[in-house]
Every structure is written in C-alpha cells, then in structure tokens.
Length: 356
Image (tube, rainbow, N blue to C red; front, side, top):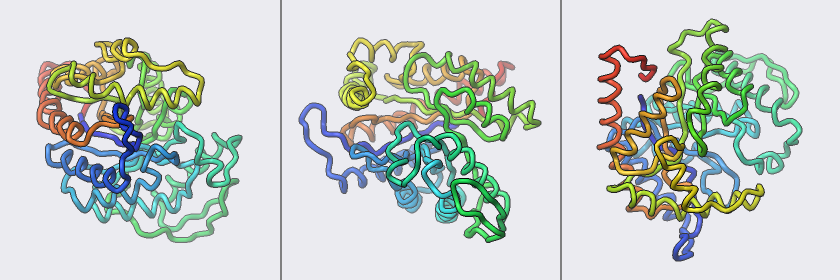
C-alpha cells in the first residue's frame, strides 16, 4: 500500500491567536513538508486546486514543480485537478513537463472539485457541470494516447491533427479519477479502467464499499485487468505522540475550516464531541498516536475490500509548522512501516489483499 499526504495549502488565521499566515512563509513551509515526506520514505504527496482566499493552491503544478526540484523519490500528484475548468491540452503539457522535471514521478488526479468558484471565474456555466468533465476527460485521455490529436467537442475548439508536446517520461502518464459519493462517477472510472481516488472526509468508511464494488464490477465487465483497477483514499488525519495530543492539535483548525464551509452550505457548527466520534474506530478521521493511525488505515483497507493508496490531509485548517513536520515524520517512520508489515503478514497467510 502506498501511504502519503495531501495539502490544500491552507492559510486560515490561527484559531487561537487569530494571526494570519504570511503567504511567503506558508509556501516555504509547504516545500519543507514535502521534503520531510520524501526523507522519511512516504510514497506520494498531492496538492489540491482551489480558487478561494483561504488556500494557496490555485496553481498546483507550479508548487509540485518546486517540490520536484527538492525531492528524490516521492511521487507528486494533484489532489485534484479541476479538469472541468481547465484546458486538457494545457493540463497534459503541464504535467508532462512536471514528469520530465521529476524524472518520472508525476501523476494527475482529475475531478470536478468540491467547490464551484472555478466555473464563473473561467467563464463556464454550472449547468454544464457534468458534460464539461466528461468531454474534457475524453480529450485528456486521447492526448495521453496519441501524439497527433483529431477531436471535436462542445466546450472547446476542435483539434485537427495537432501534435501535443512535450511527451512525459512515463508512458502512459498516470491519471486517476477523483470522486466523492456519486455512483455514476465510480462506474465511469471502472468502465475507463482508470485508478480511483475516493475522498472520504466524514461518516464511516464502510459505507463506500458498495460504490467501490460497483467500480470494480464495471471495470471487470469492460474487460480491464484487476491490477488496473486501483483504489486510493483521500482522508483527513494527523499523527502525534499521543492520541489526545493529536486530537487537541487538529480540532481547532478542523472546526474553523468546516465551520466556515458549513456557514456557506447551511451545516451546523462542528462540536468537539462530534469530532471525537468521527475519530473513533469506525469513523473516517485518521487521528491519533502512530499505533492508532496504523490501525485506522488497516481498518480502511479491511472494510473497503483492499486499497492501494491512502493520502492523508493533515491540515484542513492550520497546524503550526513544527507540529506538521513532526506528524509527517511519525507517519513515515512509524505508521507506514507498521501498516506495510501487517499487510505483508496478511498476504503471507493468504488473506485477500489488494494492496501493492
């Protein structure tokens, strides 16, 4: 199983002091976080894409390119690229360039995004929410497959045999589909034979098992080999020396972020009791000491029928930089080895395991 991190590069004010994060400092801290993740042996680091004041990730490929120059092994991916609001030609060119810079470590997770600000920002109609993504994904996959592209659609000028450069080092460039809870999205990813990245940010993970099974069934019916149908999970979490410390460090920023989103969407404020409940053994949040976090990751693997990757978003609000670095260190040096050892033991015993 690959284990890594995602970041939305949050810039919320400190929930205790109210101090705003300097954007220059925040981006410097981000690169130190990626360097730490690489140094402690984590597999992947993803950067999201948002067009909101509280995030600094509106240009994720630039941030990933900076990270590529400062790392050696870790894979670098979007989390997610809002493909509906972007030109697939430029997406491919940007990530192909990243792949060359990183010597073959780039990946793309494409999706429609959980916010809608990008649509009016780039002159798009929200009524085209579904058709934009379907059409642009089709074009992106064709560009990945063919050097000279002939294509015609509704939302972009046609291509009449133009060559798309540069070509990536990896062939094919890895493209994952990022999904939330829409059943059709799971089935579409399976039919296309693309790896799946599922965002689980609340509730209980086991509820996603039927959706993941529908993805695998659709992929099998379309003739795709099981090893192509990888499942990844994006989850929220944090690691500290003790479980209480992890919860105390994470909750203020979590409550601030989801409280702000809740005001926009009509949700009630998050209480500490609700937070603690979702941190429990069956809940979605991966919060605790290294042993607790390892057990929660294994729980995800078990209840979802095997997963190939899990990336943890350690700062939905804000974490002090030294706290974030310590959490990354513990994830890489303590949690990841424990999870891999346990999965290795299960595989030796013949227990079904889909992890790589």
